[in-house]
Image (cartoon, rainbow, N blue to C red; front, side):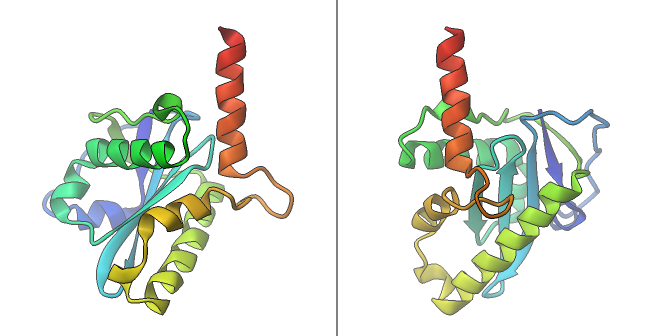
Length: 165
């Protein structure tokens, strides 16, 4: 499992560029991109297999440098809000950073970033209920009309685990 960052995220970490691991793709990789809304740095992180996505606004450099722990708590909070087991998506606090290579996932992240940036711009960014927005995003099929939603993918993952015992 790796945290796969876009160049924008790596640049926003400031200081010396972090060493990137050369790791094979894993279904549990987390993809992270950076965007700006209301002149604040925001990130969107997406789990590769389930497409579960979280958005954070007004992200600080210190949070970016501690991305594993920060994302771990954000995914856990979202899963609790969804009334799902919090261990369906876990982020190792010491997960290695790697380059983002899956162009399909990066395109989805960009699509979400545009949508979220528009929503944050429509209502002053600090007035938007990000927890509600994160929950709403889990009902969208990012793979096209009629596609699985992140919620349905999480449910399938949960069912497979229960069946395996």
